[in-house]
Length: 247
Image (cartoon, rainbow, N blue to C red; front, side):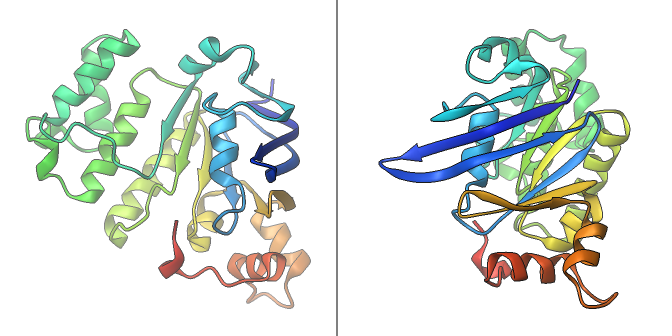
């Protein structure tokens, strides 16, 4: 069974087409990079795949669950980390996770496990408001892992983080994939996508314009061995995506 199956998925907003008939699949345990400029349809796609937004047309399944008809069955299968830090900052990290553990109906011991996994055990009693952005990002990942999802959606997981913390986040993603978890990754850092992704899809103006391994894309669209994934991205989307323009 594929971890994710998407067929002719479309979403319209007020007469404008945000996602235009995209199709792809993702294998279990794969890190799948989903890349595109601002407004290309990445976040809309994630919201449809996680049951937050109803497609205009087309179908999608995540771990065999239809994202429209089987939303309740879908929820235990997925974890979602969006770029916004929607945490309770007046509570400690441990209390944040214990609250969500009750919602997920998982044992309290799981809280200690995920805190250790992301390296926050020693700061578990500190209020989240005292955390750095990198620590908050770790906590968001811990929260998404509480119920042991099969598919983890990471939306800009290293945005605005210093290189050391970003490296730790990438290591966590790689470790999870090595353990069999499927990672659906969006990022504007092309080096990160190249390093982490087994395959990448590049979406532009709501349509997938390329889908392959980073190595094959660089070989297909590059002029020589110095071609980077960013070069391919710029060639296919017709614009430069600098860090100053991050979503």
